[in-house]
Amino acid sequence: MKLYVINTGCPYCLKAEFVLEAKRAAYEKIVVPTEDRSLVQQISGQGKVPVLVDDSHVVSDSTAIARYLEETIPEPALRPKQEDLAGLSDLLEDWSDEVFVGHVFDYAWEKYKPEDEGPPDHALMERTLRQIEADMEMLCAVLRQRPFLIAESPCAADAAIWACLKLVRDGKLLDMKAAWKPVSDWLDRMDQRVPVRLDLSYIEKHRRRSL
Image 1 (cartoon, helix red, strand yellow):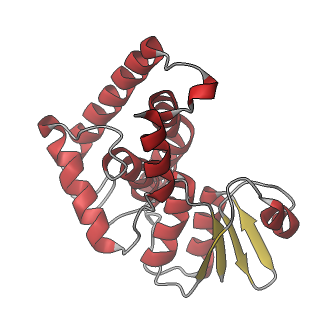
Image 2 (cartoon, one colour):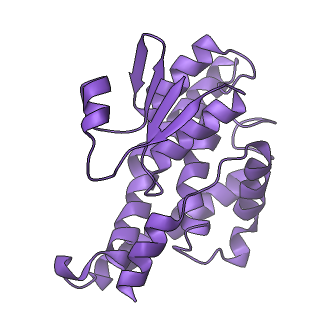
């Protein structure tokens, strides 16, 4: 298998990597240039990453990749077998991909955007920061009660939210508050499960530009 990604700290790429590692799948990671997605376009017919190629199967979108791997490599399972828990996992995964990631990206963009894009919108940053803080409080409420979001082991929802929070913590987007310790401890548990690391080179380059 081959996984095509970019090295911008993309949480969707990190999520796909986590699932592959958790499934103990043999794969090759191919980093494509952020500004040139022609290879991805040629392979998948569209320009977004991640893209997984497994022989004749080409799967784009991190959620579709997670579902494909759950079908082709059933164990260890990353989707609960109990129907209500599976639905809850799907719901949290979708919330992370469609809502939480937007809060994180909006804050990161305003904090580190290039000078030619104009000054940071501090009012937007403040609103987005409040949204992230509310998100973190909700996650803490869940993680005070259990080691992972749904069950005793990680599921796809854990992978999606972990990928966003890698950007927050390891990318030094925000300081992890003491009150967020349940989330910090969960991040450590997730890191112990898989060897996926966030490539900070792109983030550091843009951070230096903003200083």
